[in-house]
Length: 340
Ligand code: KG4
Ligand code: ZN
Image (tube, rainbow, N blue to C red; front, side, top):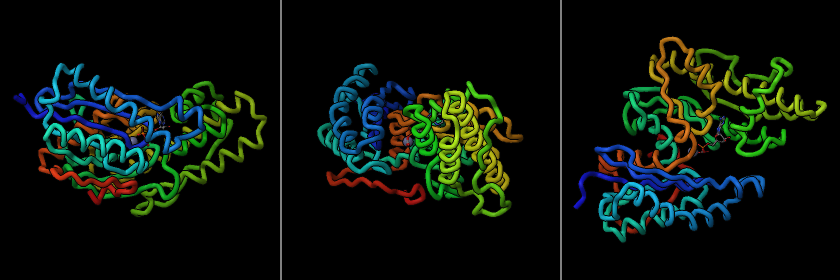
């Protein structure tokens, strides 16, 4: 007999296979992640077909692992939550088909989870979680969004990137400088060896004030500025570090300024930062200095893609009654957060 509500979470939206078990009473029971870093490094980026095939190989052993680690048997699981979008269609389909099949075989409900809602709720897995309402800055490889969160599922998009996401800008800049993948940690690492002030890059779309549109972002011009600086430089390791430093400063300053404006605009005093770029230490340091604001982050392992955030978001959706009992399913490569 099931002791309490226990959700299996499955994340396969891009190049990470994440599996976790979340229990309504005991919290997170177990989680595991397989990142396709070797594949991505070998091919110079995520190849959707290879990502899908890799998920297929990883899912079953990882699910067995977390169930074993939690000391459970499949009969203890109450529902299966999986990422239904947004993300790479093939990768999502693997997780969705697998999740739905498990739910069918175990005769339990399935729950579709929005990947960005997973990120947004990840800080709620930590001690002293934020209370609603709050402002959320979601900064990942695929998205850069400022969201006003009134309640679970009540989201208003205040601003988003008009072109590259912040994480994508980190990845592309790191690739240009030959720093490896993923770009965010590589840039942060190289920036530590920099001579500060050798380069200064623009803080895009920050010069207007007091208008909602100024809460949007644009990082493609910054990327071009970095490319021009790199191509006309001596291309030494010191220059690599100097450019990495100036780039990181520009992105972080831009994100911090937009958060500050959105906090003023909404009157909110709690700020949640999630998604891969929320692991950035400089961003954390600068946000922590915002006066009158309490900032909440996921632990580092749950900033980037993971199964725990999907299990938890699935749990929150389950108690709202948002479950699927039928066999048919669809995934959404594009899926606005406000359309859940
Ligand atoms: O959330 P995530 O794992 O995947 C998506 O949903 O996109 O985010 C991955 C992104 C990558 O672009 C990576 O470079 C960035 O997060 N990232 C960082 C850091 N760690 C990961 N960016 C800046 N600083 C970091 N420390
Ligand atoms: Zn993500």
